[in-house]
Image (tube, rainbow, N blue to C red; front, side, top):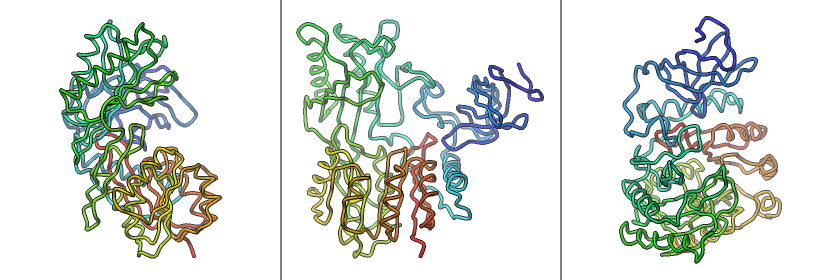
Length: 466
């Protein structure tokens, strides 16, 4: 084993003490004048790691084992912790999680956006630190001829056969157990093998509402290759069983033939129940509650009550007076646009997915909101073609951030205020670096949507420089 006083190379095994965490959750230490990034771990732990890459100024390593715990480490709740890749911070106190997430936001703004001397508010905590998710995507796998269902084993594509999970609800595990029992008792059903590109069962997606008692189960499979559609008929039987035993309100069967391992169906069939779920966001201030409907493949934030805090805080930071023309880029099913509508003169919202816009229009009707106009199309094209001028713009793009062309088009419009919501502080900071030619950061508010993980949602308000 290489000691800490010597040089090291790729393939070496080292014993080191973790110094800190990097944005995104990787652990790091400094050795021989270099930074070593480790795939996981907590500050204060002494660990054994194996070097997988060595560059001029940094190296990367994977954690082999923990030799001694961190001083403030806690006991994880789940027996799958350390094996399952679902949540890697269960052994860190929640208050400490929030401290590191705030630091991630600060480091990204300073290092990438060049934003110095900015006050960053403490993260708004999640109302719940367990059982907070309204959606989980599970995978099917095969273990010695038995079909398993669960989450990916950390660092691999293998499936951990989950017997417990504290991220969604207790009913989630009951559904997993029932599905596992059914598929293993049905000879026609097989698990998909990504390497061999054969098998039938691919993904199981469970969605639940927190305030309307609805549950949607979606099974994603390949094509049926049996005589008499035995596999498809078995899936319908599974849906009926889940409806009877687990009070599932919607059951969906989706087909996916593409080999990439993504829980998304190219064709979707509503087998039982309604095509969508409707959730209610309850805000903490005097703002009225908001009902939001979303279909199986529609995007909805995974932490319902934290979403209400996120949207409410974003609109509060916009300081709308009721006279503004508001735009909402990447609006999804209309959550931010409809939250802002009562405080604005009118709202123009855009999203590339036609189905999301259909849900957004439905949500406007459900909430009796008439001053919002939703348009489906590529944001770049919509920005170029729209004749009106925004006063305030909300931006909530995918994790990859805004396309550079979108940033430039937005700057040409020069709204007096931009409220940028992001689930990735690094790509957000990259876009802010460009926007800083015309805008200054005036408020930063992290909102924790993802307890037990290194992820953080962040809101940044930018004001036009006069």
